[in-house]
Image 1 (tube, rainbow, N blue to C red):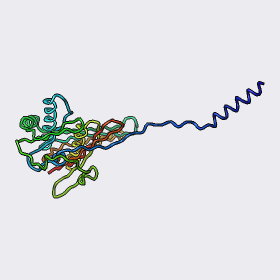
Image 2: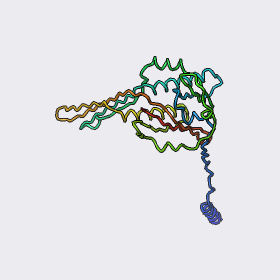
Image 3: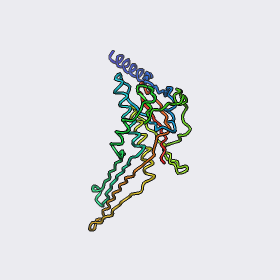
Image 4: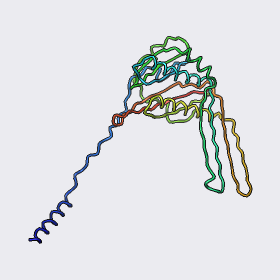
Length: 261
């Protein structure tokens, strides 16, 4: 009897091992790129009028929301008129592996806080729009009447002016193209603008210093490079924004064309 039970047990075990395992359904990632209608100025700024775009998170506190967008616009316009790009790097190499190292940082500084404050006080709200939880506003230093072409809302196709991040030089004009992604539209815009500005700054780089130092029998090389370059007439002229949903988590991508003269 024991042998029969043993044979049955082995048989059941073999059948269970041979049976196919049920497939586990893995949740599918739902990815969706969305576009909403935006006014013409969100794609290309008017050529005259010192226009600038400011962005803020959508809020029930309208005054605070508009002021935050105005502050961002004031800083952006101040930098486009006159600012410094500062790039510093340092590196040390030696025979002892652990004594070597490097560090670097980049910084953009508006040339005058007083000028930024003046611009903020003079900015006039020209037009506004909401885009997936964010408030987009068009400002100008003077009260102007925007043409209907720039006010008209539409969904633009992907811009033919953007191919990839980088520079293009035409007729003594520098065109810098940059793109950045973030879960926050403001962050994506600021990072893209800074990337474009640094590309122009690197192209115009002039001041480089280096030091070579030898110590005893061990050769130690210390290199310090600092670039501080004042840039003027550097404006965002064209932009393009996309919004993407990944399992209901929204992200944004910003494409910018910055022009330096």
